[in-house]
Length: 431
Ligand code: DLL
Image (cartoon, rainbow, N blue to C red):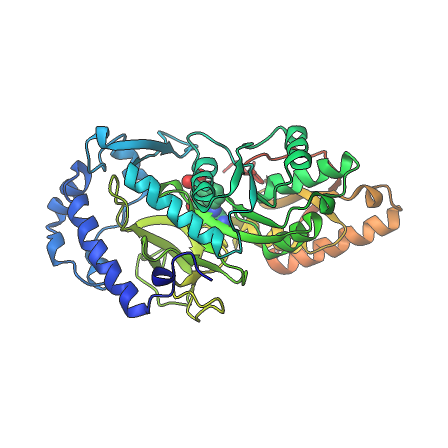
């Protein structure tokens, strides 16, 4: 039933014990690096005194900026000759952040992904078409090694080139796809345009991750593709995909708690919050030799689900990521996350598979303009019906964001498609 019974169903007290043992080791290793030895030295922190989850609160957070400051190897614990791989996050501003892995780290990561895939029901007989970018991005290789470890045949098709993806699907019959939700929304349309019924392809499961998406989008994707969808969360600083993964219950993502210590904090004050309360996820990697990162502020907003899961795993779950604290839009003084807007529009059956949120300022007032693709049948539909639909969307959104949005219906396929992480919000406001 589990890939690793002992670890996955370990009693909580034992998980916490294991976490503390690993934390001590990770802290000791971290303290030997140029970055942490300086930080801990300045703050007068003696890492040998950090022996409980509570004590951890004395440790300063690590941020993306700290990773940039210590670029490229300031947080690396071993000589580079001991490392076998690096990945880097794209970084829209400034230097990207680089992560190094030893051979053991790569093997452990593969184990982590294999285990998570197993709990979705994946087995060695499965064929995985991996449509995430290969290269410095972790999405491709991260899942690849895990799926191989499980014994699956992996089609390393990477992102993009939709017609070739479809050809591969027809020729090799993948049973699982790994893809960003935004590319999946686009690709399914291309499949239909080719006169192919997506349900006829034989795909059973989809792993969606790398960007936020709503429950409404998951449902839509499940229907369009005829699959069961599993949410996969991760970030390069913490390995990549597989940090948290849904099991067959599809009810929140189990954190690999033998690899990470998860905390939820108030993003404003940095104070730790109790399980069940929404806040920013902070992760400590306690199972990576080359680069243990301590109390990393992910900026991702979620909550820990305190109840135990029906699957019997004892590792706690996090809820679907609501957005990033730095992605929050403030329109007319109201805080909204793009995912909340997405949840409203994707719940409307007439809405197609792509949208954009454009923020503008007119005469000192914030305006929100949303371009929404409609299904082709509807787009050609009668004007009255379209006006009614437009009003319906405006009203639903106004209830959420107070400001009255302008909804513009677009022809299907007219907005730029995404092959990786979609850019949906364009803030054109001049301050
Ligand atoms: O996106 C790793 C990954 C690859 C995860 C493939 C899952 C699948 P980064 O490029 O470093 O790494 O971006 C990490 O993406 O902090 C979140 O904001 C967002 N993110 C990742 N997975 C999810 C998800 C990869 N399932 C950043 N839901 C993270 C929501 C996600 N957001």
